[in-house]
Length: 305
Ligand code: GYE
Image (tube, helix red, strand yellow):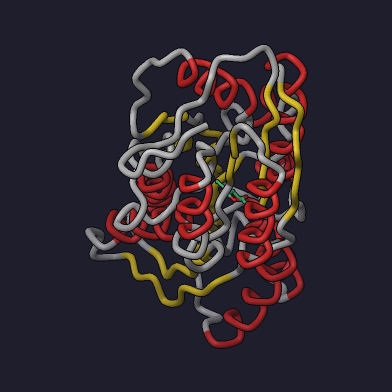
């Protein structure tokens, strides 16, 4: 493969490819479902997968990509943990003549550009997810409430944009106020701990917006431990659509969750095939997401992850 200074390296058409998949971590059901989706498609797509798990470390993920470059993979599928730290790794792959597809989280587009430095970003509209969570909460509360926000991993594109979409929508409601907003690293236990300490400072909270279901589950546990009834005293809304979240909706503890699909295998395969065939790839391959509340949680439980 040849690296063009001003373009994304090409992907030749071949019967089989060595493809690196650089995962960020494996500590939640969303990540596990995503990895499984990539592993499931690999055989059908003619991919031999070189899989790495950055174990929640952006610097390990940079090293993982570097090792894929050293192994001369044909293509790198990257789920960048944070927007900025992974940019140099993408540039190194470009220099080595290896195309990169960003999936699920994006890179900092003020530095790295899809169509110039990497093939594309395949993923959800995180601003819209935050907006949809806010719209649901406004309806459920009549536009009133003191909200605690549990943020995803600092510096990650879903955390940045889920915050923006939610906060911008809620700000237009005179009766709503975000009384605290803190990083819970997209993790259940961290979400529980952060909620525990925020509850002590803000016992008057009436709503929780968590950037993912795992943190929402942690928040629900913290609320219950503090003697509050999630779903009654405190309305909880989040994002992802995990099995636990749908069950919590059925149980009346979680109000709603905006889906964020982790099933990137088929769309990654198709995008790579189109790219190899020389088709024009849009800068953003958008993933459409459903919405789950008590009207449809039950019927979707069996297919959830
Ligand atoms: O919501 C979360 C995961 O990047 C879209 O990361 C993904 C998010 C997902 O850890 O559960």
